[in-house]
Image (cartoon, rainbow, N blue to C red; front, top):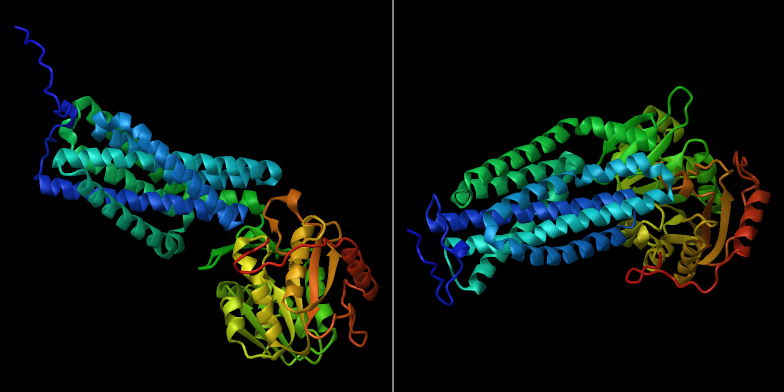
Length: 546
């Protein structure tokens, strides 16, 4: 006999919103859901930070990359929440599929981005466009999946024990925000230094898929048909298999990708607490190149020309006491120590790991003339800005700012008016400051912003540039690894002094540098002045202009 259809009474919840059939007590089930919220929130934030960190490392300008990732991801989370409204009747199954997809996409995102960078980075502008598209695509996909979690989890919580919406939202958000805090702290202090970017993202993906599968297949399994349980179990096993296989192959993948980026001549690759350091060449007559976080710090073919141009013009006056800001490779110190009359060289390096490598690596220590073994050299590890704040005034005859390019966001404070004010304070009477200011030909506005900022700090300036001799591998800290299309063709410098505009000259009493001549320097200074960009504002801490 067929029962007549009886419509649900007005105001009654639909059948799929009825009480869940749990294998545990409702309070225990609710705690399990909140624990899953905690874990998933931690994983989601790690995915987000992985994208920001890797994009900043590969493309530079961390502010821009963080803004792109965060804004796209938050926007996508809103879309995901709207889409999830249609999945509420299948909340348990939908959440299980959602977490498996999130674990796969988030766990593999770092490897995918690094693979695109490694094997297409040499295409210059094409890589830049492709990388941004991929970054936006991953941010969008991960944001959609994270945003869809909240409505489904809210539905599951309410099915365990119905309560007022405000209380349920408070419980859900509390677990979510605490999980985000744990994930945000675990990434920089635990995952990144001990596992690296690739392995940590794969591990977090595995934790994510296990948490989602345990909640759905353990707590809400009676909401699923036998076929749905089997399919979901197979999907989760497949995702775990992909992540585990990638984790097993991650070292081989990283070596292959590193060779694709740096060439097959990688000799040293270490990750310090500050940056990745890669040395290529330096044996069998091959030139030694140093990369820091994927950027060419110096090329052995022409590093001497770069460092002579940086240091020697500032040494033509008093130079008994020299301060080098940066210069952890020891090459600027080598140039300073080569001049008679130098009594002390202080090096403030942000990464003690690079200094240790410059002492211990035979090729690098030979190139820097074993500068860190000289008793006149004292090394301090730390941030140059903070170090200058505590330095005694009028201490140094020469200050050399051998720092990363101003276009890198982390370095902008080291090219600010406040920073140059601190550097001016430590100059002795008649002292000189010299700054690497980036390439003139390809980025004139950045170069002249540095010069304008020095003048705003009360310094008199003499800008100059030195041709890279057309090698395509200039040794200044400007070029992204593997990107020959964006290699600068010159180096720009600004020589400054507090009392009067310093003349551009080399001390005729000393042995002339190997690659520079007085006439060439004067001609380069005139050429730089002829291309001056007028009216550029100075850069400050609160209003960076680079």
